[in-house]
Amino acid sequence: MKKIFLCLTLLTTVLVSCKKEKALNVDITKSNLDTYAKGELDKWLDVNFLNPYNIEVLYRFDRYQASIDKEVSPVLEENVQPIMEGVSAVFIKPYLDITNKAFLLPILPKEIALFGTGEYSDEQITLGTADAGRQINLYEVNQYDRNSRFSVLGTLDRPAAFHTMHHEFTHILNQNIPVPPAFEAISSNYIGSAWVGAGNPASLAKSLGFITRYSRNNKDEDFAEMTSTLLVEGQDVFDAYVSTATDPTAITKLRKKEQMVVDYFKSAFGIDFRALQAKVKLAMETYAPVVITPPISNYNAGSYGGFFIDKTATNQGAAYVTAFNSTNILTTAGGYPIQNIVELSFVNRAANRTDMVLKVKTNTAVEFWYNLRGTISVSGNTVKYALGTPGTATQYSNGTAFQTRFKPLLDYLTTKTFALNWVDTIVPNSKDVSLGFFDTANNQLGFYGTIIRN
Image (tube, rainbow, N blue to C red; front, side):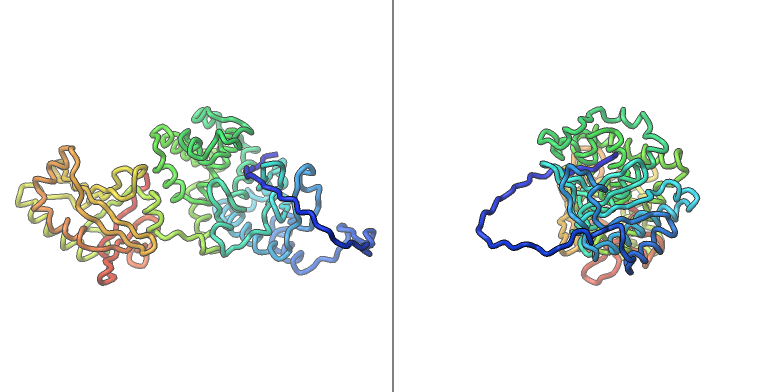
Protein backbone atom coordinates (compact mmCIF):
# COMPACT_ATOMS: atom_id res chain seq x y z
CA MET A 1 0.00 0.00 0.00
CA LYS A 2 1.42 3.37 -1.01
CA LYS A 3 0.53 6.27 1.26
CA ILE A 4 0.91 10.01 1.51
CA PHE A 5 1.48 11.20 5.05
CA LEU A 6 1.39 14.67 6.50
CA CYS A 7 2.97 15.42 9.83
CA LEU A 8 1.13 17.89 12.03
CA THR A 9 1.40 18.72 15.68
CA LEU A 10 -1.92 17.93 17.30
CA LEU A 11 -2.87 19.67 20.53
CA THR A 12 -5.68 18.10 22.53
CA THR A 13 -7.62 19.98 25.19
CA VAL A 14 -9.79 17.96 27.58
CA LEU A 15 -12.90 19.75 28.78
CA VAL A 16 -14.68 18.43 31.87
CA SER A 17 -18.23 19.48 32.74
CA CYS A 18 -21.40 18.24 34.42
CA LYS A 19 -24.33 17.30 32.21
CA LYS A 20 -27.56 15.37 32.33
CA GLU A 21 -27.73 12.15 30.40
CA LYS A 22 -30.66 10.10 29.10
CA ALA A 23 -30.95 6.83 27.26
CA LEU A 24 -31.18 6.97 23.45
CA ASN A 25 -34.08 5.07 21.96
CA VAL A 26 -32.28 3.58 18.95
CA ASP A 27 -32.73 0.15 17.45
CA ILE A 28 -29.30 -0.58 15.95
CA THR A 29 -30.57 -3.80 14.42
CA LYS A 30 -32.34 -1.66 11.82
CA SER A 31 -29.09 0.04 10.78
CA ASN A 32 -27.68 -1.98 7.92
CA LEU A 33 -25.47 -0.27 5.37
CA ASP A 34 -25.73 -3.26 3.08
CA THR A 35 -29.40 -2.59 2.38
CA TYR A 36 -30.30 0.81 1.00
CA ALA A 37 -32.21 2.26 -1.90
CA LYS A 38 -30.07 4.08 -4.45
CA GLY A 39 -30.66 7.81 -4.48
CA GLU A 40 -29.94 10.48 -7.06
CA LEU A 41 -26.27 10.68 -6.03
CA ASP A 42 -25.84 6.92 -6.48
CA LYS A 43 -27.41 7.14 -9.91
CA TRP A 44 -25.11 10.02 -10.89
CA LEU A 45 -22.07 8.03 -9.72
CA ASP A 46 -23.23 5.01 -11.72
CA VAL A 47 -23.67 7.07 -14.89
CA ASN A 48 -20.35 8.90 -14.56
CA PHE A 49 -18.05 6.27 -13.01
CA LEU A 50 -19.44 2.77 -12.63
CA ASN A 51 -20.93 2.38 -16.09
CA PRO A 52 -18.20 3.98 -18.24
CA TYR A 53 -15.12 3.08 -16.18
CA ASN A 54 -16.18 0.24 -13.86
CA ILE A 55 -15.20 2.43 -10.88
CA GLU A 56 -17.30 2.10 -7.74
CA VAL A 57 -17.30 5.19 -5.56
CA LEU A 58 -17.64 4.29 -1.88
CA TYR A 59 -18.90 7.16 0.22
CA ARG A 60 -21.16 5.47 2.79
CA PHE A 61 -19.03 5.10 5.88
CA ASP A 62 -17.35 1.73 6.09
CA ARG A 63 -14.74 1.62 8.87
CA TYR A 64 -12.90 -1.27 7.25
CA GLN A 65 -12.10 0.68 4.07
CA ALA A 66 -9.57 2.68 6.12
CA SER A 67 -6.85 1.67 8.56
CA ILE A 68 -8.58 0.40 11.69
CA ASP A 69 -5.80 1.71 13.93
CA LYS A 70 -6.38 5.31 12.85
CA GLU A 71 -9.13 7.86 13.42
CA VAL A 72 -11.25 8.86 10.43
CA SER A 73 -14.67 10.46 9.92
CA PRO A 74 -17.48 9.92 7.38
CA VAL A 75 -17.83 12.10 4.31
CA LEU A 76 -20.52 14.75 3.93
CA GLU A 77 -22.80 13.58 1.14
CA GLU A 78 -23.05 17.06 -0.41
CA ASN A 79 -19.30 17.06 -1.06
CA VAL A 80 -19.26 13.76 -2.97
CA GLN A 81 -20.40 14.98 -6.38
CA PRO A 82 -18.23 18.15 -6.43
CA ILE A 83 -15.03 16.28 -5.68
CA MET A 84 -15.86 13.42 -8.04
CA GLU A 85 -16.59 15.93 -10.81
CA GLY A 86 -13.04 17.11 -10.21
CA VAL A 87 -11.66 13.56 -10.28
CA SER A 88 -13.33 13.05 -13.65
CA ALA A 89 -12.21 16.39 -15.10
CA VAL A 90 -8.69 16.60 -13.68
CA PHE A 91 -7.65 12.96 -13.55
CA ILE A 92 -9.63 10.63 -15.84
CA LYS A 93 -10.41 12.81 -18.85
CA PRO A 94 -6.86 14.17 -19.40
CA TYR A 95 -5.57 10.59 -19.54
CA LEU A 96 -8.41 9.61 -21.88
CA ASP A 97 -7.63 12.54 -24.17
CA ILE A 98 -4.01 11.46 -24.44
CA THR A 99 -4.56 7.68 -24.52
CA ASN A 100 -7.84 5.74 -24.89
CA LYS A 101 -10.21 3.49 -22.98
CA ALA A 102 -8.46 0.34 -24.14
CA PHE A 103 -5.30 1.53 -22.37
CA LEU A 104 -6.87 3.20 -19.36
CA LEU A 105 -9.72 0.95 -18.22
CA PRO A 106 -7.59 -2.05 -17.21
CA ILE A 107 -5.37 0.05 -14.94
CA LEU A 108 -7.89 2.50 -13.48
CA PRO A 109 -8.64 1.83 -9.81
CA LYS A 110 -11.86 -0.14 -9.43
CA GLU A 111 -12.85 1.58 -6.20
CA ILE A 112 -12.48 5.14 -4.95
CA ALA A 113 -13.35 5.47 -1.26
CA LEU A 114 -14.08 8.90 0.20
CA PHE A 115 -13.60 9.98 3.80
CA GLY A 116 -14.45 13.22 5.52
CA THR A 117 -11.15 13.72 7.34
CA GLY A 118 -7.63 12.46 7.05
CA GLU A 119 -6.56 9.32 8.87
CA TYR A 120 -5.22 10.57 12.18
CA SER A 121 -2.61 8.70 14.16
CA ASP A 122 -0.28 10.36 16.68
CA GLU A 123 1.28 13.24 14.70
CA GLN A 124 0.55 11.90 11.21
CA ILE A 125 -2.34 12.47 8.85
CA THR A 126 -2.78 10.19 5.86
CA LEU A 127 -4.13 12.10 2.86
CA GLY A 128 -4.39 9.26 0.37
CA THR A 129 -3.67 5.59 -0.18
CA ALA A 130 -3.52 3.21 -3.12
CA ASP A 131 -4.05 -0.46 -2.38
CA ALA A 132 -2.68 -3.02 -4.85
CA GLY A 133 -3.61 -0.84 -7.78
CA ARG A 134 -7.31 -1.52 -7.23
CA GLN A 135 -8.52 1.07 -4.71
CA ILE A 136 -7.66 4.67 -3.99
CA ASN A 137 -8.77 6.36 -0.79
CA LEU A 138 -9.24 10.13 -0.74
CA TYR A 139 -9.42 11.91 2.59
CA GLU A 140 -10.40 15.37 3.90
CA VAL A 141 -13.36 15.53 1.53
CA ASN A 142 -15.42 17.42 4.11
CA GLN A 143 -13.06 20.39 3.69
CA TYR A 144 -13.30 20.38 -0.07
CA ASP A 145 -14.41 23.60 -1.80
CA ARG A 146 -13.87 23.96 -5.54
CA ASN A 147 -13.94 27.76 -5.09
CA SER A 148 -10.95 27.67 -2.74
CA ARG A 149 -7.50 27.68 -4.32
CA PHE A 150 -6.01 25.98 -1.27
CA SER A 151 -8.71 23.31 -1.26
CA VAL A 152 -8.25 22.51 -4.95
CA LEU A 153 -4.51 23.02 -5.36
CA GLY A 154 -3.07 22.83 -1.87
CA THR A 155 0.65 23.45 -1.45
CA LEU A 156 3.72 21.35 -2.11
CA ASP A 157 3.86 20.16 1.50
CA ARG A 158 0.08 20.13 2.01
CA PRO A 159 -1.28 18.53 -1.17
CA ALA A 160 -4.96 18.52 -2.04
CA ALA A 161 -7.14 15.78 -3.54
CA PHE A 162 -6.08 15.99 -7.18
CA HIS A 163 -2.39 15.91 -6.33
CA THR A 164 -3.18 12.87 -4.19
CA MET A 165 -5.15 11.24 -7.02
CA HIS A 166 -2.36 11.65 -9.56
CA HIS A 167 0.24 10.62 -6.98
CA GLU A 168 -1.58 7.40 -6.18
CA PHE A 169 -2.26 6.62 -9.84
CA THR A 170 1.46 7.03 -10.53
CA HIS A 171 2.02 4.22 -8.02
CA ILE A 172 -0.42 2.10 -10.03
CA LEU A 173 1.54 2.83 -13.21
CA ASN A 174 4.75 1.94 -11.37
CA GLN A 175 3.23 -1.37 -10.27
CA ASN A 176 2.83 -2.22 -13.96
CA ILE A 177 6.22 -0.90 -15.05
CA PRO A 178 8.63 -0.05 -12.20
CA VAL A 179 10.43 3.24 -11.69
CA PRO A 180 13.70 3.14 -13.66
CA PRO A 181 16.60 2.11 -11.39
CA ALA A 182 18.60 5.15 -12.54
CA PHE A 183 16.04 7.43 -10.89
CA GLU A 184 17.10 6.30 -7.42
CA ALA A 185 20.71 7.09 -8.20
CA ILE A 186 19.97 10.79 -8.76
CA SER A 187 19.35 11.33 -5.03
CA SER A 188 20.79 8.99 -2.43
CA ASN A 189 19.35 10.77 0.60
CA TYR A 190 16.20 8.72 1.18
CA ILE A 191 15.39 8.31 4.88
CA GLY A 192 12.17 6.27 5.01
CA SER A 193 9.64 7.14 7.69
CA ALA A 194 12.06 9.62 9.25
CA TRP A 195 10.96 12.10 6.55
CA VAL A 196 8.28 13.35 8.98
CA GLY A 197 10.83 14.40 11.59
CA ALA A 198 12.12 17.83 12.44
CA GLY A 199 15.43 16.80 10.91
CA ASN A 200 13.87 16.97 7.45
CA PRO A 201 12.60 20.53 6.97
CA ALA A 202 11.39 21.60 3.53
CA SER A 203 14.50 23.72 3.04
CA LEU A 204 16.79 20.71 3.54
CA ALA A 205 14.74 18.53 1.21
CA LYS A 206 14.95 21.23 -1.44
CA SER A 207 18.70 21.64 -1.02
CA LEU A 208 19.10 17.89 -1.60
CA GLY A 209 17.10 17.95 -4.81
CA PHE A 210 13.69 16.74 -3.58
CA ILE A 211 10.42 18.34 -4.64
CA THR A 212 8.77 17.80 -1.22
CA ARG A 213 9.73 16.55 2.21
CA TYR A 214 7.74 13.38 1.55
CA SER A 215 9.88 12.65 -1.51
CA ARG A 216 12.69 11.65 0.83
CA ASN A 217 10.71 8.58 1.96
CA ASN A 218 11.87 6.41 -0.95
CA LYS A 219 12.34 6.44 -4.71
CA ASP A 220 8.74 5.43 -5.44
CA GLU A 221 7.32 8.30 -3.39
CA ASP A 222 9.89 10.64 -4.91
CA PHE A 223 8.84 9.64 -8.42
CA ALA A 224 5.13 9.96 -7.61
CA GLU A 225 5.64 13.37 -6.01
CA MET A 226 7.58 14.60 -9.02
CA THR A 227 4.88 13.36 -11.38
CA SER A 228 1.90 14.71 -9.44
CA THR A 229 3.58 18.07 -8.86
CA LEU A 230 4.37 18.54 -12.55
CA LEU A 231 0.83 17.55 -13.50
CA VAL A 232 -1.30 19.26 -10.85
CA GLU A 233 0.65 22.17 -9.36
CA GLY A 234 2.08 22.54 -12.84
CA GLN A 235 5.21 23.58 -14.68
CA ASP A 236 5.19 27.16 -13.42
CA VAL A 237 5.21 26.06 -9.78
CA PHE A 238 7.89 23.47 -10.50
CA ASP A 239 10.07 25.96 -12.39
CA ALA A 240 9.74 28.50 -9.58
CA TYR A 241 10.74 25.86 -7.03
CA VAL A 242 13.76 24.79 -9.06
CA SER A 243 14.92 28.27 -10.00
CA THR A 244 14.88 29.48 -6.40
CA ALA A 245 17.05 26.61 -5.15
CA THR A 246 20.36 28.02 -3.94
CA ASP A 247 22.38 24.85 -4.56
CA PRO A 248 23.25 24.27 -8.25
CA THR A 249 23.51 20.53 -7.54
CA ALA A 250 19.90 20.51 -6.33
CA ILE A 251 18.80 22.23 -9.53
CA THR A 252 20.62 19.63 -11.62
CA LYS A 253 19.02 16.77 -9.68
CA LEU A 254 15.51 18.18 -9.98
CA ARG A 255 15.90 18.74 -13.72
CA LYS A 256 17.25 15.20 -14.18
CA LYS A 257 14.26 13.79 -12.31
CA GLU A 258 11.89 15.90 -14.38
CA GLN A 259 13.37 14.55 -17.60
CA MET A 260 13.26 11.00 -16.29
CA VAL A 261 9.53 11.35 -15.53
CA VAL A 262 8.94 12.63 -19.07
CA ASP A 263 11.01 9.80 -20.56
CA TYR A 264 9.32 7.14 -18.39
CA PHE A 265 5.83 8.03 -19.57
CA LYS A 266 6.98 7.86 -23.19
CA SER A 267 9.04 4.68 -23.03
CA ALA A 268 6.78 2.77 -20.64
CA PHE A 269 3.34 3.74 -21.95
CA GLY A 270 3.84 5.78 -25.11
CA ILE A 271 2.37 8.85 -23.36
CA ASP A 272 3.48 12.36 -24.29
CA PHE A 273 3.87 13.71 -20.76
CA ARG A 274 3.95 17.34 -21.88
CA ALA A 275 0.66 16.87 -23.71
CA LEU A 276 -0.83 15.23 -20.62
CA GLN A 277 0.48 18.08 -18.49
CA ALA A 278 -1.20 20.63 -20.76
CA LYS A 279 -4.49 18.71 -20.59
CA VAL A 280 -4.41 18.63 -16.79
CA LYS A 281 -3.61 22.34 -16.62
CA LEU A 282 -6.53 23.20 -18.91
CA ALA A 283 -8.82 20.89 -16.94
CA MET A 284 -7.82 22.49 -13.64
CA GLU A 285 -8.44 25.99 -14.95
CA THR A 286 -11.77 25.01 -16.53
CA TYR A 287 -13.08 23.03 -13.57
CA ALA A 288 -11.85 25.45 -10.90
CA PRO A 289 -10.84 28.85 -12.36
CA VAL A 290 -9.72 29.87 -8.88
CA VAL A 291 -6.44 28.01 -9.56
CA ILE A 292 -5.47 30.31 -12.45
CA THR A 293 -2.32 32.20 -11.46
CA PRO A 294 -1.84 35.65 -13.00
CA PRO A 295 1.43 36.00 -14.93
CA ILE A 296 2.74 38.66 -12.53
CA SER A 297 2.66 36.10 -9.70
CA ASN A 298 4.64 33.58 -11.74
CA TYR A 299 7.06 36.35 -12.74
CA ASN A 300 7.52 37.32 -9.09
CA ALA A 301 7.84 33.69 -7.94
CA GLY A 302 10.66 32.90 -10.37
CA SER A 303 8.74 30.69 -12.81
CA TYR A 304 10.21 32.48 -15.81
CA GLY A 305 13.89 32.72 -16.67
CA GLY A 306 13.30 35.75 -18.85
CA PHE A 307 12.11 36.59 -22.34
CA PHE A 308 13.30 36.62 -25.93
CA ILE A 309 11.87 39.74 -27.57
CA ASP A 310 11.73 39.58 -31.36
CA LYS A 311 11.29 42.91 -33.13
CA THR A 312 9.93 41.12 -36.19
CA ALA A 313 7.42 38.91 -34.33
CA THR A 314 3.80 38.97 -35.50
CA ASN A 315 1.91 41.96 -34.09
CA GLN A 316 4.86 43.08 -32.01
CA GLY A 317 4.18 46.32 -30.11
CA ALA A 318 4.57 49.36 -32.39
CA ALA A 319 6.19 51.58 -29.74
CA TYR A 320 8.82 48.95 -28.99
CA VAL A 321 9.55 48.47 -32.71
CA THR A 322 10.02 52.22 -33.11
CA ALA A 323 12.43 52.37 -30.16
CA PHE A 324 14.35 49.35 -31.43
CA ASN A 325 14.66 50.73 -34.97
CA SER A 326 15.86 54.10 -33.69
CA THR A 327 18.49 52.33 -31.61
CA ASN A 328 19.59 50.16 -34.52
CA ILE A 329 20.15 53.22 -36.69
CA LEU A 330 22.47 54.65 -34.05
CA THR A 331 24.38 51.43 -33.38
CA THR A 332 24.73 50.74 -37.11
CA ALA A 333 26.24 54.20 -37.53
CA GLY A 334 28.72 53.18 -34.86
CA GLY A 335 29.60 50.05 -36.80
CA TYR A 336 27.44 47.54 -34.94
CA PRO A 337 24.01 46.74 -36.37
CA ILE A 338 22.09 44.73 -33.77
CA GLN A 339 20.12 41.51 -34.14
CA ASN A 340 16.33 41.60 -34.09
CA ILE A 341 15.99 39.30 -31.07
CA VAL A 342 17.12 40.62 -27.69
CA GLU A 343 17.12 38.79 -24.37
CA LEU A 344 15.75 40.15 -21.11
CA SER A 345 16.62 37.61 -18.43
CA PHE A 346 16.95 37.38 -14.68
CA VAL A 347 20.44 37.62 -13.24
CA ASN A 348 19.81 35.18 -10.37
CA ARG A 349 16.27 34.08 -9.53
CA ALA A 350 17.42 32.35 -6.36
CA ALA A 351 18.62 35.72 -5.04
CA ASN A 352 15.77 37.91 -6.31
CA ARG A 353 13.31 38.46 -9.10
CA THR A 354 14.13 42.13 -9.55
CA ASP A 355 17.54 42.22 -11.23
CA MET A 356 17.45 41.54 -14.96
CA VAL A 357 19.94 41.97 -17.76
CA LEU A 358 19.15 43.18 -21.27
CA LYS A 359 21.39 41.34 -23.73
CA VAL A 360 21.75 42.61 -27.28
CA LYS A 361 23.89 40.89 -29.91
CA THR A 362 25.37 42.00 -33.20
CA ASN A 363 26.01 39.90 -36.29
CA THR A 364 29.71 39.99 -35.42
CA ALA A 365 29.12 38.32 -32.02
CA VAL A 366 29.72 41.53 -30.07
CA GLU A 367 27.28 41.85 -27.16
CA PHE A 368 25.97 44.84 -25.24
CA TRP A 369 24.55 44.24 -21.74
CA TYR A 370 22.56 46.53 -19.46
CA ASN A 371 21.31 45.81 -15.96
CA LEU A 372 17.66 46.64 -15.38
CA ARG A 373 16.15 46.58 -11.90
CA GLY A 374 12.42 45.91 -11.74
CA THR A 375 9.97 47.21 -9.17
CA ILE A 376 7.16 44.67 -9.04
CA SER A 377 3.63 45.19 -7.76
CA VAL A 378 1.87 41.85 -7.64
CA SER A 379 -1.40 43.39 -6.45
CA GLY A 380 -1.21 46.04 -9.15
CA ASN A 381 -0.02 43.58 -11.82
CA THR A 382 2.79 45.91 -12.86
CA VAL A 383 6.53 46.08 -13.25
CA LYS A 384 8.68 49.17 -13.80
CA TYR A 385 12.33 48.99 -14.80
CA ALA A 386 15.19 51.31 -13.95
CA LEU A 387 18.74 51.25 -15.29
CA GLY A 388 21.02 49.56 -12.78
CA THR A 389 24.73 49.55 -12.05
CA PRO A 390 26.64 47.69 -14.79
CA GLY A 391 28.57 44.54 -14.03
CA THR A 392 32.26 43.94 -14.67
CA ALA A 393 32.02 41.65 -17.71
CA THR A 394 33.21 42.86 -21.11
CA GLN A 395 29.62 42.93 -22.37
CA TYR A 396 28.77 45.55 -19.73
CA SER A 397 31.76 47.62 -20.79
CA ASN A 398 30.50 47.45 -24.37
CA GLY A 399 27.11 48.58 -23.14
CA THR A 400 28.58 51.54 -21.28
CA ALA A 401 30.56 52.59 -24.34
CA PHE A 402 27.43 52.49 -26.52
CA GLN A 403 24.88 53.64 -23.94
CA THR A 404 24.16 56.88 -25.81
CA ARG A 405 23.38 54.92 -28.96
CA PHE A 406 21.08 52.59 -27.00
CA LYS A 407 19.20 55.52 -25.48
CA PRO A 408 15.92 55.10 -27.47
CA LEU A 409 15.51 51.47 -26.40
CA LEU A 410 16.69 51.99 -22.81
CA ASP A 411 14.46 55.05 -22.40
CA TYR A 412 11.48 53.12 -23.67
CA LEU A 413 12.05 50.23 -21.26
CA THR A 414 12.74 52.45 -18.22
CA THR A 415 10.18 55.24 -18.58
CA LYS A 416 7.09 53.06 -18.83
CA THR A 417 5.14 51.08 -16.27
CA PHE A 418 4.06 47.77 -17.74
CA ALA A 419 1.14 45.49 -16.88
CA LEU A 420 1.73 41.81 -17.58
CA ASN A 421 -0.79 39.70 -19.44
CA TRP A 422 -1.11 36.97 -22.05
CA VAL A 423 -1.27 37.99 -25.71
CA ASP A 424 -3.28 35.07 -27.09
CA THR A 425 -5.95 37.48 -28.37
CA ILE A 426 -3.20 39.20 -30.37
CA VAL A 427 -1.03 36.18 -31.18
CA PRO A 428 -3.22 33.04 -31.34
CA ASN A 429 -2.15 29.95 -29.35
CA SER A 430 0.56 31.87 -27.51
CA LYS A 431 -0.73 31.56 -23.94
CA ASP A 432 1.94 30.19 -21.59
CA VAL A 433 4.44 30.65 -24.41
CA SER A 434 4.66 34.43 -24.88
CA LEU A 435 4.01 37.11 -22.28
CA GLY A 436 2.90 40.65 -23.05
CA PHE A 437 4.00 43.90 -21.39
CA PHE A 438 1.23 46.48 -21.73
CA ASP A 439 1.88 50.23 -21.31
CA THR A 440 -0.34 51.28 -18.40
CA ALA A 441 -0.49 54.84 -19.75
CA ASN A 442 -2.60 53.79 -22.75
CA ASN A 443 -3.33 50.06 -22.14
CA GLN A 444 -1.68 49.26 -25.47
CA LEU A 445 0.76 46.41 -26.01
CA GLY A 446 4.27 47.66 -25.45
CA PHE A 447 6.01 44.44 -26.43
CA TYR A 448 5.84 40.71 -25.88
CA GLY A 449 8.48 38.04 -25.52
CA THR A 450 8.81 34.28 -25.66
CA ILE A 451 9.19 32.93 -22.12
CA ILE A 452 12.56 31.39 -21.21
CA ARG A 453 11.59 28.39 -19.10
CA ASN A 454 14.92 27.22 -17.62
